[in-house]
Amino acid sequence: MKSSIRQGVKLLATGSAVPDLCISNDLISDIVDTSDEWIFNRTGIKERRISSSPTSLIDMAAKASMQALDKTQINTLDLDLIILATSTPNDLFGSASQLQAKIGASKAIAFDITAACSGFVIAMVTATQFIQNGSYANVLVVGADVLSKWTNWSDRRTCILFGDGAGAAILQSCSTVKNNILGFHLNTDGQKFDQLNISCEYSNFSDKCIYPGLRGNFKHITMHGKEVYKFAVSKVPQSIQSCLNSLNLSSESVDWLLLHQANNRILNAVASRLMIPAEKVISNLSKYGNTSAASIPLALNEALEDKKIKNGDLIVMSGFGAGLTWGTLIFRWYG
Ligand code: COA
Image 1 (cartoon, rainbow, N blue to C red):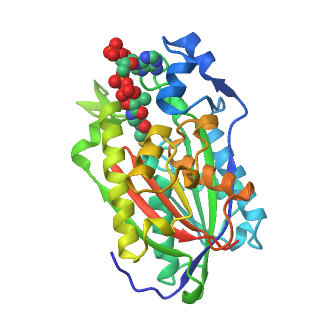
Image 2 (image 1 turned 135 degrees about the vertical axis):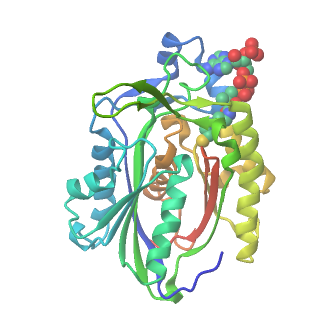
């Protein structure tokens, strides 16, 4: 999809935050019938962080945001827009406004994007549109999720996978010649929504004023693991290839493949289909598991702090998950 670009976009800085509580595979083996060996062999996960506070989503999002902002000359009052990608809000009306209040960004408009594990990529694309069309100059994009609160801890097929975390990125407008965000490619297949979801169940209730009434109650994560696996390893390489083609770039020109951290086997299969060597795949899921919308910015921040990513590197970022949704964003890093 093409749009007229009036301003360029520069990714200035990133930040991240995770809860202190670390749950190892061995600990999970005390709760359900599994083992460290099974989990690690099938997923690459060793441990994950779990939050225990009701305010953890906003606390982590704020910590990651301030860490990113502290690396720039921008202060919170300079922010025009905050986009919070989360599927685990602490308010169904949205949580971004609480993040705006917590960091004191009173001049910023703030809203949530709900797109599960593709949330951060879709939020980055959305932020890019607002900057490129000249509407806003300084944008904070956050991916934060606390899936542990929606995990069925007696279901060994899912509870081994997820963890909590937050990651943030600061985007700023710049001249079009310095534009860092090169292109994107997004997809949705709503026919398969039930392959991975947290559904709302309704039950009848009677009330003096409203009759008959229905009351909603969200359930826990349900997933068809094999189907989701097949979806990821087939659709994600196609999305990346389409995006590369649209920019006349080859997969050899990719310096880093930054995929949603769902499963090492998925990461390796996608890389191998694109003929991208394993050394170019960023992976930190052994420490955090699948942190949904947080996973990409968490891994990006870590790779930048470790100085893995160098000036001018071409990075392919790709998210995929519930919806089903998937999408790719390609950018160059200039720190
Ligand atoms: N520990 C031990 N055994 C387990 C287990 C666990 N945690 N979970 C499932 N098993 C068992 C199953 O009961 C089954 O046993 P059976 O053959 O006796 O029936 C066997 O292991 C194989 O189960 P299966 O579901 O076929 O495993 P799998 O090879 O597909 O691996 C996943 C399961 C979840 C790791 C894999 O399907 C996957 O990674 N899918 C993608 C999930 C994902 O990334 N989701 C998020 C996307 S955003």
